[in-house]
Image (cartoon, rainbow over all chains, first blue to last red; front, side):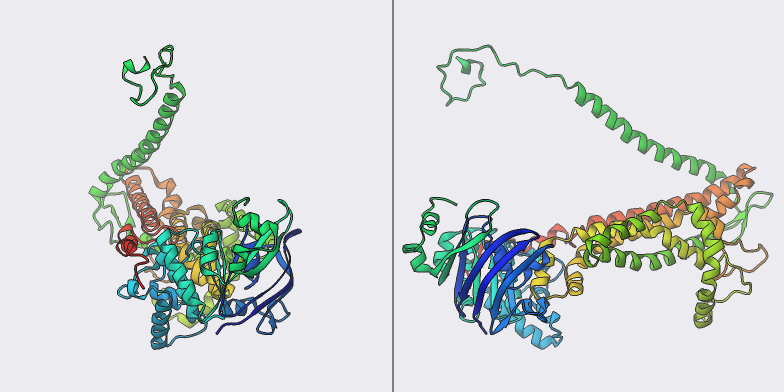
Length: 258
Length: 354
C-alpha cells in the first residue's frame, strides 16, 4: 500500500524557463516527507511532477527520472492518468465537486475506475470517511452537497476522496494554508494517521507544521529571482531543524530570510 | 485647542497650535451630478421605449380582438378584416414553436461540442480560428441565410427529409406530405439552427473556460481522463450557462423573420392544416412580414398586431425563464443559500472529533 519514490536528476521547465534544477531524492514508504522553502522556489512545481499533474499547465515539461516501485513514471508508454490513480493529490484550497453530494464526492474516484456495485461503494465511502476523520461529522448527511461543509471539513472530504481509490502515495500541496488553526490541527492529526498506510509528501509554508508532522524534511531554495529552484538539503526532520548542514537552511528555519 | 469644536477624538494630544479650520464642505460634485442625470435618463428612456411598444401593441390589438368572431388563441383560421373577421393564432403558434425547438435540438449539442473542443481539446493554434469561424456565422445577414437556405440548402436536405419521412412517417410530426415542395418547416429549422449556433457556442465557450482550475485539477488528480474531467467538473459547472444560452438562442429563433419568410412556403388556404414538419407553414414573424401589404384597415392591422403581441410575450417569457434559471443556479451549480450553509453548526465543533 505504500511505495518508495526515487527521483534522480529532475529538471522542470515552463517553456524555456527552468523552474527546478537537478533534484534527486528518495522518499521512504510509510513516512511523511515535508518540502519547505521560500515562495517561488519550485517546491509545489516539483511536487506536481511526482504525479505528472504539472502536465496540466501548458508548456511544462520534465527531464530526469521519477521511479515508483521500479517503474519510471516518465518512461514511454506510461499513461499520466494511470499515474494519478496511484499517486493521489490534495490541493491548497479544498476543491470538492460542488454539484456532488458528500457521498458522490468520495465515490467519484471509484466510479472512474468502473466500480458500480452500490454495496462496495457504500463500504469504501464509509471506510474512507473514517480514514479522513470525517465520518462522525457527516454520516447523517451523506446526500447533502459537499460544498455545504466548512473549509476544514471540505479539505478532509478531499482527503477522503483521495484515499478512497487506495493510492500508494498522497501528495499534499499546502493543504492547511486556507484553513483556521483548529481545522489545521485536525488535518495534521490526520496526516499522522495516514502514514500508517500511505507514503505522504506535503508542501508547507508553515515550519512548525513541517516540524510537527514530518519524518523527513527537504529544503528548497533559489539563488536569485529568475534562477531555478534547487534542493538544498534533505534529512531527518529533527536534524534539519536542530542541526542543518547548510547555512541557507539554518538561515531559513531560524527566520533570517524567506 | 482643536478639540473645542467637538471633532477631535478625546485621546488625541491637544497641544498642537490651532491651525485654520479644516474645510470639509462640499467639493463640487458637478461630474457626479451630470453623470447620474445622464445614467438615470438613459435608464428611464429604455423603460419608456419598452412601455410605449407595449402600449402601442395593446392599443391597436384590443379593438380588433374585440371584433374577432373566432377563438384568438385556439383557432387556426386567419381571415381578419371584412364583415366577419375570424382569426386565431394556433397554427402560427405551433409552427413558430416547433421550428424553434427543432432548431434548438439541433444547435445546442453542436454548440456544446464546439465549445468543449475549442476550450479543452483543440490545440491553441486551432481554437482561435474555429471560434472566429463560428462567430462569423453571426455576421451573415439573415436575408443571405434565407436565400442560401432555399436555393442551395433545401435541395440538399431533400434526401434527408425523404429518409426521415419514410422511417418515421407513422408519427404525425414526421408525416410525408403530398407535395414535394422545398420550403418546409424542417428546412427552416435547420437554417435557424445554423443562425443560433454562434450565440449558443460563444456563451457556452465562455462558461466552460471559466470552470475553476481547482475543480478541473481535482478531477484530473483522481485519475480522470480528459472526457471524465469534463463530465465531473466542466459540464456540471457550465450546465446553467448552457441552459441560458439555449434560451437566448430560442428567443432569437422565435423572432427570426426574413430567413424564415424566404424559406417557408405558405400553405394553400384551401388545404387542410398539416402538423408535419415536412410541410410548409407560417410563423408569427413570417406571417406578419408576408402580409405587411394588407395593413389597409385598422381591423386587419389589429389582427396582425395581436399576433405580434403574442410573439412579444412568448419571447419575453423565454428570456425571463433564462434569467430565472441563471439566477437560481449560477455558474458552479451553486445551491440556494439556505442549503449551502448546512455545515455551519458542525463547523463549530470542527477538530473536536477523535
